[in-house]
Image (cartoon, rainbow, N blue to C red; front, top):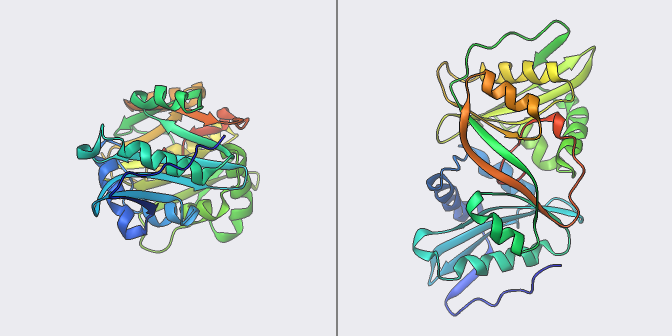
Length: 294
């Protein structure tokens, strides 16, 4: 059930933020070690322009949360951060209550850091799996096997790509996914699609971040396509650059792929849901899109 709208204390303003206002949230996320992408914000806010909230105390920003409504049935929560000087004051709770009210009765997913998971349980979220971030300069990787073709996506590939994205994510998010996979010129994200016998066998995206690069999503029902996409995406980063891959622990083959490439554990979250969790093909997810938007 949605929480009651929190009545903020005097001097506190809570509302959806403009892109320029929410930019400070990426700085806060970077300070927490979340390592946001350099060009994330336009695509993020395109998913739900009213889904990025901030609280101001006496005119100064003190906390933030993203509460993206993907559909009438499903939303995703992220960016739940209080500024260091505001922690322990109840200002984080204030924006949590406002954000949950905005999400209403729909199912809500989140990727929770270990320190917050018990708080999320008390708010009705249930643990469904662990996501592990693997990080490091990837070792030399083999070329795509025979029968797998890799190339950059074009507009005509989007219907098949978006169908696979909906299956792996559990909800339609076509506007966000299309901009993420086919970004505007100058955006530091690049994608690859894998084809087998003329059909889409998987796709993935790599983006430049505050520190190194991240691959996400990496979705493929075909394990050989997933391996080829991972190698191809790593090759798009400069030689020796650090690459991050967020892997569902339940996809044992994906964990093995990251470890075989020389990447090492650096961070983790728990995927949690309030409401009925979607039935996802975890074996098709070789890299989570983002911890902020799912």
